[in-house]
Image (cartoon, rainbow, N blue to C red; front, top):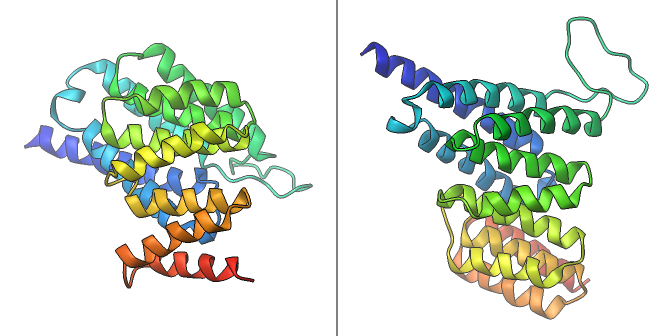
Length: 242
């Protein structure tokens, strides 16, 4: 019973910090609620899997887990407004770049020290996110490609979703579209079909392809009646006409 209690406490702790990390690390706007929800679900599911049974029977994973929690807290530490000095006893960063640099170093340390653990797989995903925030697309691609190739389907979906965003910023449109279509064809709990569709449609819209975007928005509305995804698709489709 005591071991089960410790296991539950660890699971609750990991779920809490990863949910908060998703809320702070996600760089999507409020308009993209479906994607934010998907990311929150993702970290909860991956956290539950990571803490399940035999994954945590050795000290390596225990240590990696503790360090991941610390790194996640760094990644969600507040950024001070410009010109505001640091307050004693209150941890903060002067810029998002400073925060991402510190967090990436911690996540990378986990990968380097515990490369064969499942916690390291999650750390690679966060290395990719931090690298993307820093504009280091080469490092972001490398880490997110590793996450996208993970044996855990939920983590792989998250990796593909984030990697597609990096490809878009590099104007690697073919690769980005391919990843979105993979996610649409094989949706997961963490990245639903509607989430991937909305992102692909928004991509087409940004590339001045309104007809392609509208087709997808109409499909989302049809397949997801009376949902937030349908409402978002309807708003975007209406905006295309203006």
